[in-house]
Amino acid sequence: MENKKFYITTPIYYPSGKFHIGTAYATTLADCINRYKKLQGYDTYFLTGLDEHGQKVQTVAEGRGLTPQAHVDEMADSAKKLWKLMDISNNDFIRTTEKRHEEVVDKVVEKFLANGDIYKGQYEGWYCMPCENYFTETQLVDGKCPDCGREVKLMKEESYFFNMKKYQSWLEEFYDENPDFIVPESRKKEIFNNFIKPGLEDLCISRTTFDWGIKMKNDPKHVLYVWVDALTNYISALGYMTEDDSLFKKFWPADVHIVGKEIIRFHGIYWPIFLKALGLEMPKKIYAHSWLVMKDGKMSKSKGNVIYPETLIDRYGLDALKYYLLKTMQYATDSIFTPEDFVDKYNYDLCNDLGNLLNRTIGMVNKYFGGKVYTEFEENEQDAELMKFTDEQIAKFEKNMDELYISNALSSIWKIISRTNKYIDETMPWILAKEEKTERLKAVMFHLVENLRKIAILLIPFIPQSAEKIFTQLGINEDARKWDTLKENNAIENGLTVIEKGEPLFMRLDTEVEVEFIKETMKA
Ligand code: MSP
Image 1: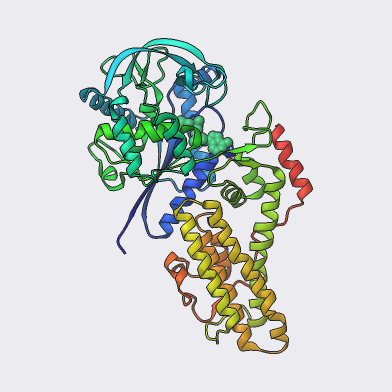
Image 2: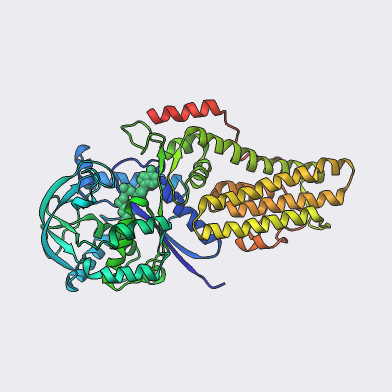
């Protein structure tokens, strides 16, 4: 097979505080998509990292009595530790304070200056400190920041500007020709109607009021305002405009930039324009995901409603968290975290549906055939119907994954799980055993193991550790774990041996105790 390439990125996070499960979502999502593409045989590259410059980071560092560098170093260590704990499959971790990044940013700015895309002027606008963003009067909502709802200040300063207006008609045409550039559609409409159609404003790209950033070489009292710096990470990490730009040549353009809904404007307007100004290809897709929120709104320390990934992983295991996030988060709408929902998903989906199917199957194969699975039998209508249903759901799964309906893709897997559980009830293996219908019993055991094998393959992108456990318990060899074998029914060798006693994948939780536990951790 020809090696197809796939490049996926997450936003680079501000190192301003500990990451909660909301922030961990985009990385979990990108990890899932990356693993899916890898499973399908793509040569993938997955980038994440930290956005370490800017006034906010400087303020947080000062508040901790640290230099900004010492602060971001500490944060980078803890971010890397978290992604390791979460078994994130990223290829690189870019930090915007790294020399390799700063050098590319310098060259990018040089190119903008040389092309006349940047000019010096006076900026006056309403500035939101936490968002590090200026707004025009009309963009404010009730006089407050339209993104975070906090107070804004009228500020004026000498600044460099990027001439966005020059690219107005090009951008409109680009959107016309690439209707799926931004998904979901609702987000695209939002930025197109609210920001592009009314006419682009030139973008202020430098500051003189703080110094924690990349200094403009041509005028060093100016520090680059964070978006030119931040967005460039997607190409600096690949070595764009450096001696070794092999990764850039191989992987650019990005196949998907995963971003949160509130930063879609920067990715949907400024980023394509910067790339156009550099003469580079456009990313193929930008997926703007929604937010994980609490019943009382955004997660925040002051509200005492924050959940950290480590807490959940420590008590319930990594796959419980990954499954929860990927199942709960919807394609285009915010999702609400509740401890009850977390525990229910664990108990019903993971423990009952998936865990029991594996346990029952292994128990029966051991009881009836001493752990052996046979591939020679006559297929009957019940079997054919199960296979047909499974094939249909696999096709739906693929379509959902390709269109980034991740939660729906999980639903397709769970439909197979439920249908396979139902197959046990329909075929009643215990009756077949009693009536000594051995040939029929062989067929039933084969179909159970075969479907669990397929289920485990489909689960690799989501809960890789559990998928691995299923393969191991069933004795599935490496070759039969491959994506291409999903469409075959002959990957299992005759006489395959399952383990003697299945280890439960997930232990049933006491709902009341666990809901209380999660609520307590939120207060801590
Ligand atoms: N540094 C910029 C991104 C630059 S990308 C070139 C930034 N950083 S951030 O740390 O504030 O946010 C990073 C991402 O986390 C955003 O995409 C944001 O949507 C996401 N999330 C923060 N809280 C979230 C939830 N509660 N739920 C889901 N995602 C959330 O913006």
